[in-house]
Image 1 (cartoon, rainbow, N blue to C red):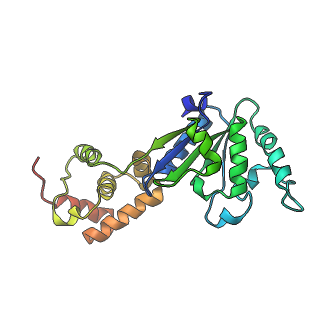
Image 2 (image 1 turned 135 degrees about the vertical axis):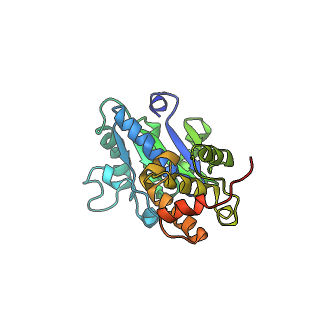
Image 3 (image 1 turned 60 degrees about the horizontal axis):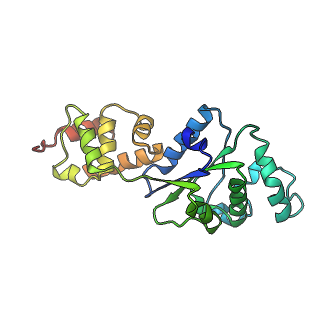
Length: 241
């Protein structure tokens, strides 16, 4: 991440992947790394409810007097670069935009302007199959934005976790066979005593996603809580290798 932010040919990173794969968590870790390296960081306030509010995602980063009486696009667009640049005297601000397709149109215009002027280094996320907004597609096609693909945990990755978990068996019995690879990986780490936060850190997920997978595993195995989870996994017959 710190190498990319110093690359004059790179204006941002776009993290793509399916829901629940950990895009937001990965991007947050990149943002933390940038801050630790001394970069000024900021976040856009994206939400489905805010898509209809002009500049709703970036309003907190702009001067409070912009559009106080009425929304004045020319004034906002003219003043935005200076307002953001004032946050960092030495380098571009690393701006985290979670779920870029949720940006309202005025925010997209401002964001494209900030990136093109070198005021902002974009760190964004988007789901698989989601097209980059037209306002940013020029940067994408010009190789100014770099793409990072995140995928679901592979079966090879699950096997690696199994091998690192002494005393537990492979999931070939009926109960655990219904678990997805991600649910099994989370369950195995939970039986090692890791907290939801520690599992999230290791698998690059959000804590909420980890708890969601644990809940599904409990429901499929017909158990409640981590103590029963340990017993359920240990009681399964071992798979032949």
